Length: 97
Image (cartoon, rainbow, N blue to C red; front, side, top):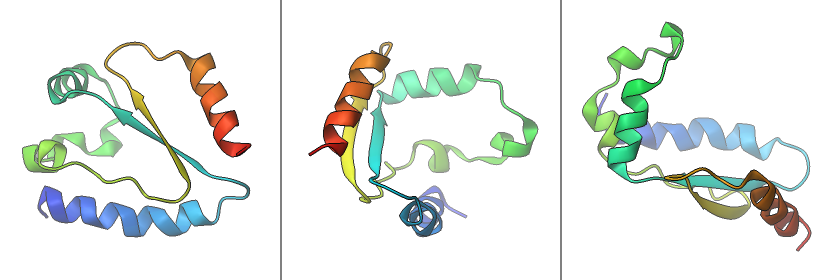
């Protein structure tokens, strides 16, 4: 399965699950430069059941995954540490609009 077709399947699988969540939904979109993402990916340790060793370069880095579009969207730059308290304030403000 190519990376592009794999990504296209993520939205249809995720969307019904997210739509069943109670209350307002705020989508948090984390943004990071590809080089930083690759470095973090190489150094992370995850359970083998995630099957990371079978993921192709195209699947991982071939194209950007679009937002689900299910609620207010907050984009967070994650190249540097995130101010979690400020992010929580943004989420609360978004819900209270």
